[in-house]
Image (tube, rainbow, N blue to C red; front, top):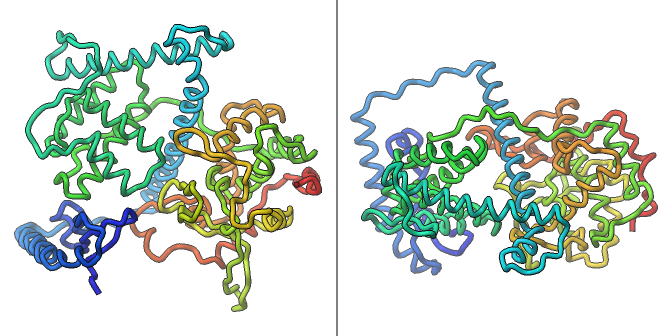
Length: 517
């Protein structure tokens, strides 16, 4: 057995040695010593472990010497109930902001994708066959892109040569500067981070664009030469750009922090110099709203659920079940849309009377299979097995799944991947935005994602504990303690979901169950 040898998802072997908790402050706060062996052959990788182990113990010995030479660390004060509540509120706010950013990115991408043919025709100087409103939007996007390119170049030159600098080229080109290892943010770091974290193509492209933006404004330098002063200068340049909102600046800094944090964890750089550089937000923005009971009754009295009608987009039964599952389970739209038949199954558990029971569950996972399109989840906490709400079983969801012709395929075979991210449900989201208006819900702050907000509101009202809510919604815990031994059991999850209800929702009277195909 080779305990320090670990295989990454990409097949490359790593040396990993845990760092004792008391020595972590003297090793940059890291939890482990991690080195890529650059090999996919296990026997060849094992041959390197003795030398790596010797080097690892040498690092630990140095940390012990540093510890002995330091003053004893102060004992952290016990947190008050008010502090814990503030941290919980801040954590929930961060989760909400992350979801809102994802929604905004998706909406922007969809608008650009829709108008790409119009922008191409305008750039080529050809005849444009599009409504005047679309032509106007396309022109604005083209102009905004040109301004951003020019502005980024000017900002870069001013950062390096002063406010009187003028670009001598028209290209948006980063300046190579300084000696170093030759490990760059926009190539090596983005590629390495993406190989380990497996983001969607759209997600990787977003990080690459931000790395290029940083290089353009500050200068392209080997990553270990990037200083905190560089990051602060980058922040000031972003803030000075009148076209950028506070939220945009916050997101740009967050993307940079993520890349540098990965580089620090991989020992490419000694410390993440952007870790403490953040953007305070005081802008007011329209938050996603819950669906009211009247909204829900109106939605499920609409033609899709009450009359069995289906849109012409070829979505099939997804338009019927996705809103119901999102409402009663609190799951994300894409998580539901990518379910495979094998992900809907019965699981055993022991109830409060010590009797063996079986529960229908859905397994939300990124585990690959023979499908050419792998599942996508938001983070590691999004991998979860949760029991179905009894109402979904009563309404016939299990019967629908059992009746699918292809029992080795997906639960909603009518959904097709679109866009750079190969998302199955993006078009469903666009359809829902129109459909809810047809049902009389015109509030723009009420979107498909509002089902998740609605679920959380009623879950809290039902007295479901926070850690159980996190399990159902696939949220990460607030601190490190949440990662050890606190995942709720299936027994607890079954009891919780059975208690979930929405007062005033007349679901059985509204749905046309016999018209499910």
